[in-house]
Length: 482
Image 1 (cartoon, rainbow, N blue to C red):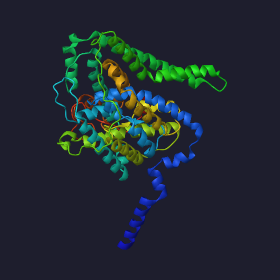
Image 2 (image 1 turned 180 degrees about the vertical axis):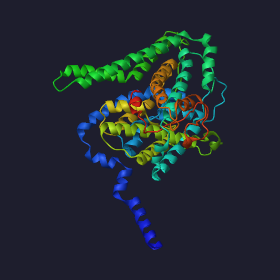
Image 3 (image 1 turned 90 degrees about the vertical axis):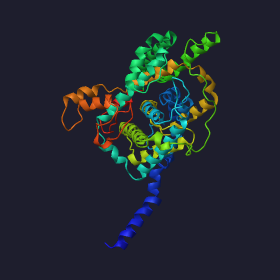
Image 4 (image 1 turned 90 degrees about the horizontal axis):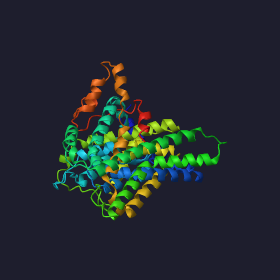
């Protein structure tokens, strides 16, 4: 074949790739499902969107605390992803927004604000920049068809990473449950300082936090019981029974919002009766919608602070997203494509950076709630995003009364189900040289440097311990997080 023929074929292939109708439909999946959308599906999407919205509001505030950012940045990160994914995403079940793992990573790649306090926050400028670059990298990987790289990452390391993240996040919130204050950057120092300051426990905070956790456990049991009962109902079952179980399911599903609202009401009542200071509260939250603006590319030391986060955060975000996307696709009988999911997630992050969002990805727990709510299309994300915008516009004054112990309870309860304790026994049984045996799992779980996978043999800062692949049989565990 002559060079002219090769050049002609390359030009033809490039033309077809850039201007083919099918390619553009693949890049904008809504052009495929929207023409088939039927009005009778609208109610399903509205109910699912509202249910997820009630879940994401308290979670977003709590996750911003993990990310060491002002709480309002959690809400800034909770709506753009819902809008952008409707345009570029292929899964009807995915909800994109702040997650515990991404928040934990974001906390390590920022510039601390040296205000002298024990709970010093990071400069949001660098978190927003990280979201922008994360989006650009993910879009580039999707265009270059690099979605396949996730298939070559060790299946063991995600268990180590998620379990280590759960332990780090959970123990990091115990101080808020106890109402004590200290500053530490390392997991072991968290443990040391908890015991060192245990005598300073504020019993009002501790009592409220424990009550919140107990309530969350009880409401989760209500949700599971009602879900099982709904599955057993048939067309001949009385409609009253269906209404009762559905109401209980909604109450159980919205447990995070219910707990935060009740706890805030208790604090408001105490403050109104001059009992201020008994319970540690969130304090003032910036009101109003975020400004639409470019990230601050003139910020000093961007590469110094973001470091290898420019590689780690986009990759881990994609791993989280594609795991649940493929899992729900198998469960509900549709198809998702890795490269398009990369592009969709990239636009969610890049677009979010224009409204002060930090890096986001698909949420396991909220996506499971979305699916269980019988969502019919990605339009449910529009309802969720709209609810967050309404909260930003009108509800931020009420966030002043949210107790830190209640948010800590929401976080601890959420991350508890990230602990994959079953895999340790499984790995011990199948211990072979070719597989990363329990010692590698423990390495990922307890060490600060990731050496479990030759593909990811780079430095990971303290408290960041590894990742894993989407091919392991982990989806049933992930969907149980809700």
